[in-house]
Image (tube, rainbow, N blue to C red; front, side):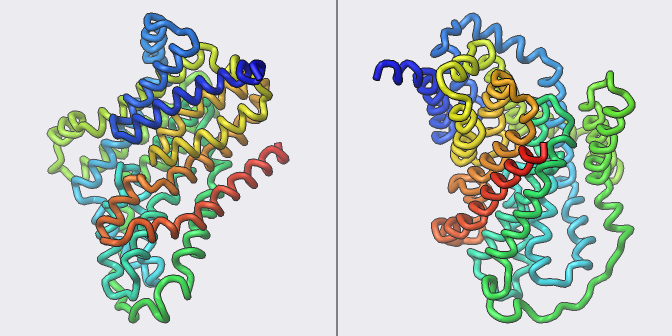
Amino acid sequence: MEDIFIKSLPFIKVITAFVVMLAGMRFKIGLGISILAGGLVLGLLFGLGLGEWAQTGFWALTQEKFLFLAAIVGLILILSDAMERSGQSRRLMDALSGYLTSPRLRLVFFPALIGMLPMPGGAVFSAPMVKTVSEDMHVSNSDRAVVNYWFRHVWEVCWPLYPGIILTVALADIPILDLISKTWPGTIVMIAAGWFFFLRPGVLGKGELMAPQPVTVRSKRSVFRQGLPLLLAIVGAIGLEGFISSFMPGVDFEWGVIIALVLGILAVMMQNTSLGLRFLLDVVSKKSLWSMIFVIVAIFIFKDVMQASGVVDRMAEAAGGGAALFAAAVFLPFLVGMVAGINVAFVGATFPLLLGLLHNLGMQDQMIPYLVLATFAGFTGVMISPIHICFILTCQFFECNLGRTWRKLVGPCTVFFLFGVSLFSFLQWAG
């Protein structure tokens, strides 16, 4: 009995640190502070003194990876805010509306489009659009809410502008294409599951959803003009990153993402001269921007504290690799995702542990499959979380019952997770 307790002690200590972290998230003391508190408890429980903890934290913030990530996330938030504040997001949607003739496509298109811009609570931004396009449709408010919520998030497992994706590749030190080239089928599965559970005939509405609508003016030129900043940011980031990795191996590929985002921001400001430099000052002083930067600070400190205190070595010594890997790749990402309701939380809190275990066990060649599995497990937790801010605010906007609407998510979330397990197995077999 004593031997079992000794072997389980490292896991008890890690779980204690995660309980502290999850409690902080649950009681809304702030994601960054919660991760810092969990890292402090973790360090103390594994024998890292306060002085060593502070020194480890200081050196963590001098790493190039941290500086690059902070810059990229900050630029993404500036681009999102610029498009929203200038009204360019709305104009882009108006330009695209002429191409949307199917009622079901009209319902999902704007949440999916807004989903390309990573912004906190973005489902609230698309909810009024869903309400507008569905005014003449025979659809319940609960269906409107769940369609808006689900399709707002279909890109999160593969879209290169999402902080969770960027943080994952920064922690793993891999090119972004190495990850999203494996996770992109998750988006297809989310769209297919969304159609089957929410949109297919017999599930959404009864009979015809709405009467035929007159075709509005279509302008490809307008679509291109209004979507230019997004094109520069997304296509430019992927293209420049690939170019740097192939032809300039001595240069950090993150420079390609930064250059593309700066070009996107400049395009918005040149197309909307009313923004001016005052806009940049306003964005830089926004609390949401610095809150996200602080989360990144906390994540990098947590990562290095975990390494300095030998957490991974103790866990690997105390138990077989299988049990530790299951906890780090499935259970903990799902739990943190469900409690926090945000991708950055489960990536930052659990991926350093997963990557450390893989390194310790000599399984670096399995890093991508395990990152994929952890991404699907964590994002399932995020989507099924009843405290996910997008879900709560969407239900409030459409004035629908939160419990009844939440139950509609169980089926598609289960399908999504099981697909992630299947994809993990395939990647292991193919590798």
